[in-house]
Every structure is written in C-alpha cells, then in structure tokens.
Amino acid sequence: MTTTSRWRALTHHQLFWPVAVLVVLLLVNIPFTPDFFSIRMSDGHLYGSLVSIVLFGSPLILVAVGMTLVIATGGIDLSVGAVVAIAGALACSYISGQADQNALSGVLLAMGLALLAALVCGLWNGFLVARMGIQPIIATLIIMVAGRGVAQLVTDGQIITVNSEPYKLIGGGYWLTLPFSIFVVAVVVAVTVALTRRTALGLLVESVGGNAEASRLVGIRSRRIKIMVYVFCALCAGIAGLMISSNTSAADGNNAGLWIELDAILAVVIGGTSLLGGRFSIGGTVVGALVIQTLTTTIYTIGVPTQTNLVFKAVVVIVVCLLQSPKFRAKVFGTKGRGRATGPAETAAVAEAAPKMEVSR
Image (cartoon, rainbow, N blue to C red):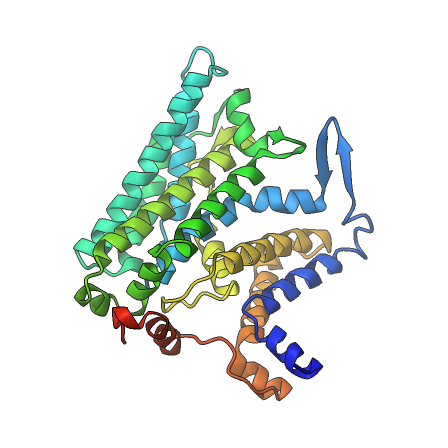
C-alpha cells in the first residue's frame, strides 16, 4: 500500500475528522493558555484543563451514548434534558429532607428513586413510539415540555441545596486521583460497547434502524428493541442528572440539563452516526461529545463574547459536518473515494453484513 493510499484510507476513516477537529481545538487554546496541557497534582487529586474537559463533559457523554442507540433505530429523544432535571430534583429533594444527609442508605435510596423515575420516562417514550406509533420527535417532546414542570413541582420552584459528602462523590468527588465521574462514564461506555459489539444486540439495533418492518418480518422484535433503547437513553440521562446535581450540590429544575439534548444530538452526528438510523459508532459519539465540550472551553478561553458563543459553536459544528461529507471533500479538495456510507446506502451495508436476516430497505 502506497503512502497516498494509506493517507486516503486514513482520511476516509469515520473518526479521522472528529479527532482532527478535537486536536485543532485543543491546540487553539495554547496561545491563550500556555499551560493548557499541563496536569498537576494537588491534595492527591489531578487538576488541569484536560481533566476539566473530561469532568464537565461526562454528563454530555452519558446522554450522547444513550442518544446514539435511539438515533440508530431511526428515532430521536428530545426529553433527555427534562429527565436530567427530574433525576437531580428527586435525588436532592429526598436527601435534603433527611436528618442525616451523609447517611449512605439515604443517598442510595435517593439515587434509586431518581433512576427509577428516569426509567419510567424512558418506558413512556418507548411505549408511545413503539406501541402507539407516534413520531419520536412528538412523543419525546411531551416529556421535554412536561418534565420541566415536574422537576419544578418537585423542587417547589426553588433551587434545592444539599450537603452530602457521599452524594458529592458522584459528580464532584475524586477516586484514584481522578474525578469519580470519569470512572462512571468509562463503565457505562464499556458496558454499552460490550453489549452492542460483542453480542447480536448491536446488529439488531442497526437492522431496526435500517428497516423496522423488514426486521419484524424476519422475526426481530423491533418494538421491544425500540422500547429498550429509549429506556437505556433515559437511564443514561438519569445518571447524568445525578452527576450534574452532585457536582453543584444543588438541583435546579429549570436550568439543569437545559439544551443538553441538542448538544447530545450534535455529538452523535459529529461522531458519524446518521440521523436516518442504521449503523452507529459509540467511539465516534464519545469523540463528538469531547469536541462539543472542548469547543465550549475554547470559546471561553479565547474570549468570545457570550452573546455570540452559540453562533461560534454552530459554525464549528457545520465545518465538522462538511469535512465528514465525502461529496463536500470531493468538490472542495478534489478527492475521490466512497467514504463512509450514509442514509439509504448505510442501511444497505447493514443488510449486506447480515444476509441471513434478509434485512432490506
């Protein structure tokens, strides 16, 4: 293989452009913060800009991982931000009412109630989409709107603060010198990859996203698959809600997780997963989430006015998506090659990978 062909193969890899943009964003910070890449040890904990990016990006990674599987089935979940707010509100509300907020049993029970509520939200979304046949964007919009009201009812419209060391560990504590949230994210991502790439579950999810009716006809329980991914997405959002409220030791039903659903969708798209459903990439989603968080950090580092930071973020996201497009690269750079299949071609690749299932579009 020649150097040119190797370079072409590298640039056509799904993760090349997201990783390249991530590296560029990190390097942009150096002129403004010379010690941006430095990591220091203080009181037995590691600190630094890179550690902070992973720490503050952990909730987004969790939500984006759950969103990836939903999008892979051809759906979308706009309710994750509200689920984040509900989970944090329930946990902090329960802990604040305890005589001893540091009691481990009380903290575990609060976390259990919060995650149970998240599972109920996911089950409701899955029921509306899979059983009632409601469009995902409409079905999840219900909890997106009503969920904020539920969180406000739980907190009585106030910001509930807690003083619990065990609860603080989830999003603001450290373990083995690293933020504990990093280990939580690592476990969730590892379990997700193991279930979707080491078992047939990932192929089933992709086949449902490629053609749900064809999947049903060959014996795949597409409705159960859809319900399962919505429940999993809500569970990830619930954990993120615990993480966010734990990091601030407070629950804000109005602002917690606000617009995180949009950042999660952007992270999934940047990672190379098509919104049309079908093949997906958990690794690409993680990189996409890190790109979003690094972009947010970079915006504040270089001093972009707060009133224009959303425009700045939108421009960068558009550039990333265009760089990922084989047609755009072919027109601008004059490159040739198939690149990564998207849309209908993507589902054809799923069918080709599983001929025995006879999944067609």
